[in-house]
Image 1 (cartoon, rainbow, N blue to C red):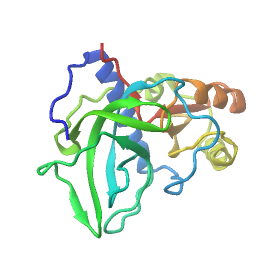
Image 2 (cartoon, one colour):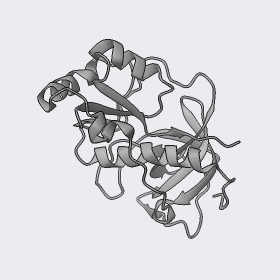
Image 3 (cartoon, one colour):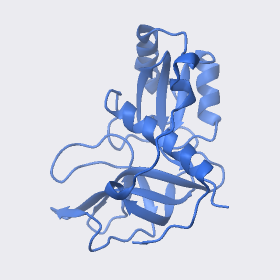
Length: 213
């Protein structure tokens, strides 16, 4: 596994951290999909984009490792599925575990995402990743939405069957229904705004685009 990261601008990193921190906060109270739920509709982005994501990397035997961003079954070893990783290497001191032919660990992973898989450029153990927290603007009290939790929960019950894309988890906060997907270039947010009205659903990406220039 790579041990060094290319320098990244603070603005891009802070933007990535904001979305990642929101995703972690929602996961505790969100409605998860079933692990391995198929992606619906067309994948985005149209072209590979540099991203960072946090989650469990899991590999079963000689199968391709995956970065799990959604629900994880709390068994031993854990069970999950996610974005396939290309170029991933396990390290001797990377904090991973192996049991029953399964190897796993938690990491922040950088790489190029093409809508289906992620080509790894770098990674770091999640326990050693200490980013600065930046508030999502939609979570600020002055930017609160006008929908009630009851209205948002009703939409949350329907959106899993209506959305033409995979939803990792969702939950109401600050007057909005926050919906986390693997990656959105704006296409999924546009669909949600057209379907449920503006300022109702906030789509967030588990893989956050970063500027590597």
